[in-house]
Amino acid sequence: GDEDLYKMGHVTQTLANQFVRVKQVGDCKAAMAELTKFLSDYLGGERVANSPEGFLQFATDCFLSRGFCDNNLGAWTMRFCDFMVDRLGWSFVVCNVCNLGLAGQIREQQLVFRFDGERREVPIVKFDNEALCWTKFPGLTLPDYWKCEEVIRLRQVYATSACEPREINALQSMFDHTFKRVLTRDRVFEFQLGHAEEMPYRLEVVHAFRSEHAELYRRFAEVSDPYTGGTPIKAKTTEAPEGGYLANRLRPGEALLA
Image (tube, rainbow, N blue to C red; front, side):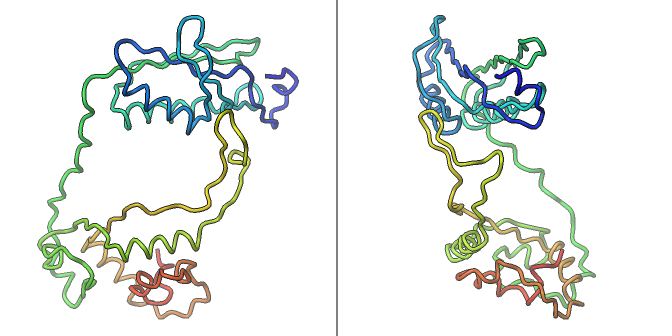
């Protein structure tokens, strides 16, 4: 980094000599293939010659600094750990940081991961055995598109159902209609080493689930029943070309109710 720029707390600079070095112990071919793709696609890393110690080495320019103390090393560290632990299923062992330079503004960091076997299944949420208060539901009609019979008969508080293709198409239409391609200070169009990064043009809905929760729907009905409409504000999602399939399930203005 530039010493003069370090003194200017409002200026962001891209630091020089940025490298991610990887050292594998044992046979880690499968993990290394995944990690190499991650470093290239998400950190904009470019494979360069191995370090003198024999480490696999990637040059990158994703690490930024502002002033003496502000930097994004922690943010990228968490992203790296999430990939290794959540995606590859490795165990995080230890992290240590060394601060160099007159003010400690130059940093190097070591992360250690260990493979302990196939990753564990994500533990399920504890089942809710709460019983519904039947006296609050007389006269309330639950949505006709709900599927779980146990919830419809008030024998179960909630259930989760996979959305149908038409519902997913309606959600995709809402995403497309309301998406704003805005470049910000920390997300600008740039060409990184070996990888060009730019803002996406759209978000793609891969899958969706619907929560059929009898008690929450009852509370929503209590709020929406007294509502008579007339608000001049309109939710943008109601104007989506194919969003009407979902928007029509609400009365005008109900999409704005908290």
